[in-house]
Length: 396
Image (cartoon, rainbow, N blue to C red; front, top):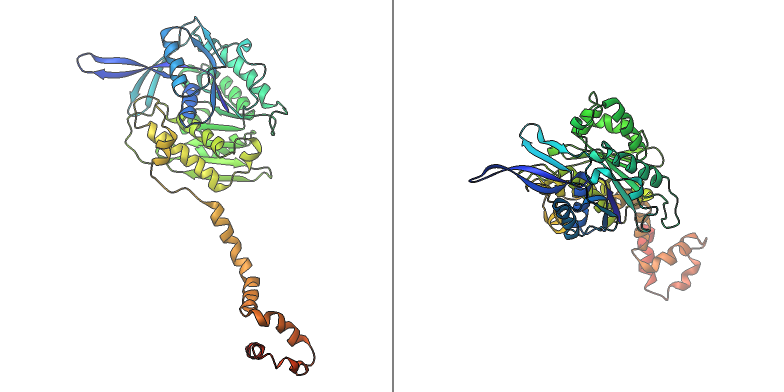
């Protein structure tokens, strides 16, 4: 089971309505919230941890979670207003946001709202986005992540759950870049997986290309660092127990784009859902992923993100929709690996095969060839069937 913690807000998306002109349409959103919705629609167990308002926007948020099979046991309700994020699409810059979040319900999450003990089946915790910029929610989630990241429990084979971090950076909300960068690196170091976009890296490490930024990031402590590259797909670096790093990139499926709201959140959720569906959601299983498994996880997530971009707002696809989408075939390393070992095995097998072609001589041949007197066993002549078999053996 996966827990997504952080903000849950209303995206007021600009739209044009005939007879009314431009209007703002209220759509449930927020990065961790969207990620939870994506996971729930893919049929993977997930819960949302956070505060929701009791106002009508809060009800809208709550009902969508229920509709998408997201558990609500870790949600606290509050009379404070819901956070509003006004969104406008820019053809060159992508979605542009204006937030109204001061004193709102979701951003007022307190340490007292956090569970002292997580459900025993918790395998992963997701955090990040604007909830790590605004207070008091940022301090509450940081303490929660640091606590759970080092937890040892008999409830789980690996002890601490997988911690997955998506900063989903909003530069206009960051007043002190140096201070934020220091916190970002602290959170990344405490995480198992860090998923970022090329735009995130351009803000944090503007002088590095995405791959060098991933190398810097993975050296801080995460086992897996992923960068989404828009139409160019996704690139990932996986650090194994022996210190080696596996590099994998996977493509997207080219589909018409309506908007990109929720694309990164959907990618994140789909990637984690794939790990859970395949029984790979643990720290030990993660570092043991084969190259093909990592590729398939990235490609599954890219397909989900490609689909959400064909829709207005963050409306992640179902598992059936993702699996039905045609694109580059998944890699099948389990079949490729045995092929690599066949050439080495062929030599001994060839000799054995040649000797085994005639079943009767296999046993008789060593006995007949190695006994000093080949003629004495002429007593075997009565057995006429063995004589023809012995002649080919002498010719060889």
